[in-house]
Amino acid sequence: MDDDEFFCLVSAVLDEARSAGVPVQVCCSAPDTRGFLRRAEYAVEAGASAIQVILPYYIQPDLEEAFAFVETAARACGEIPLVHYNTGHAKLTFQAKDYRSLKERVPTLIGTKLPRDEPLWISNVCRLVPDVSHFCGEYAFAANFAGGVKGMYSWLAVTNPRLTMRWYEACSSGDWNEAIRIQQLVNRFKLEVKTGWNGKSEAAINKADAALNPNIHCDLRVREPYRSCMQEDLDRARSWAERNFPELLEL
Image (tube, rainbow, N blue to C red; front, side, top):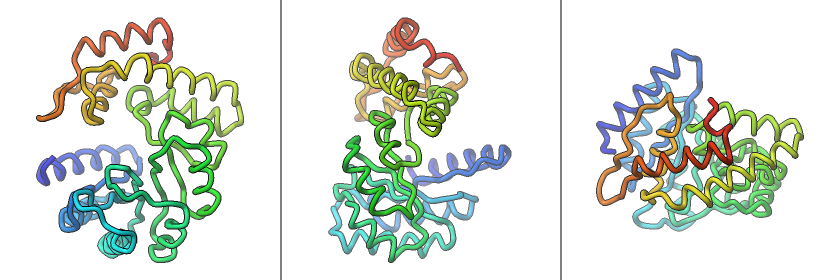
């Protein structure tokens, strides 16, 4: 998205969330600092509850440059807290010791989205940096929750928010039989269905995730050069889920 499209989307989402009393964090990724600041300043003014930070990802910063970037983001956002998306797209991945140093320099850092489905690595981050809320993906969620994460960022919340909350509540209450049952089904759906979709980029796959939800009406098309998922991908996914994972489609 260009800036104008980004501003339009942020305004629409925040307006809708405000009417429902739901807090929203806005990811303001950009390949350069000025691009990030334009987006972050707009999101703060529009009423974002938090700003998600991704390091500039075209030219890889070293660790000190990365810390300086997050400090710049914090100054621009003022009292609005930051969440760091520790994505591999940014080339530099923060380790537990890095977060300990960063938290001292940026007190408004309140959360992370961690990139690796590796329970021991994630547990170590949670253990060494307990004053930050850490989140993970979905493919090792049950193990990572046991290791200290607070929740997850997941396509499942778009496809079926009720099922996502049921999974979270199973982990929170210690109902590990239910948590592991859902974990196994989520992983099977990935391996047996989503890996065969025509679209391979995250954008293409996430649009298909949304289209699986009958309450969300969106086109599958993504912009060049990326390939889009196809209607046949959704048809196969629904057919598989009806046989093997029916609750995925029960909203």
